[in-house]
Length: 245
Image (cartoon, rainbow, N blue to C red; front, top):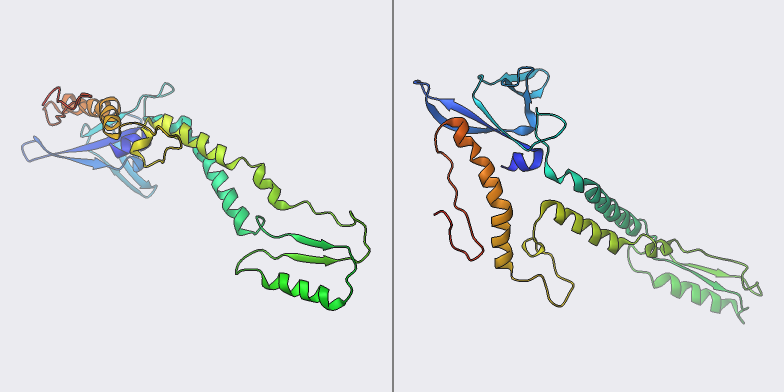
């Protein structure tokens, strides 16, 4: 089921005993599974030199339908990949922003002439010693009798107000949750509203009924393929009782 959710295709290999009866069902990694020109032939291909062909008719293929082809399945979360990549880019941008020191540091610009040079030196030394380890360097510019706008600084840190980091993180998170249809209280997300997300137990039951149960129903196809009832599941209702114990 993990392969089915990630790749849109899940595979099981049927291994028979000496009498030709099913003995066990072993999962085959979907990442390396390939179908042949004859679609009932399956191959395990890790590289072009290492290829294993399964016995014809021994592979069960559970796939998520794709309207463009019928060879492999297509996972449902593909529509949220752009939101995932945007979230990653925003996080990496903010990490690099802090790592290169653009979030800190300034220029102290002094135009009034000091009575003694020692005062200027003392101010420069105090500014230098005020830095902590790994902080960005601050600069001191002394220009006696200089003009008010003789030196102008456009801080790099102003980009922090323009990258809209928090909105990007929240919007992309909501897109990913919507694609996977997982209630936020089941993922450890802290609510930002006073009402919270509601009862986690009810959300878990609704998630099991609306998302887990359909996956279980899809896996019941294995019974038809194998000709034996090897897969059985319980169904859940919102009141916690079993529909089919």
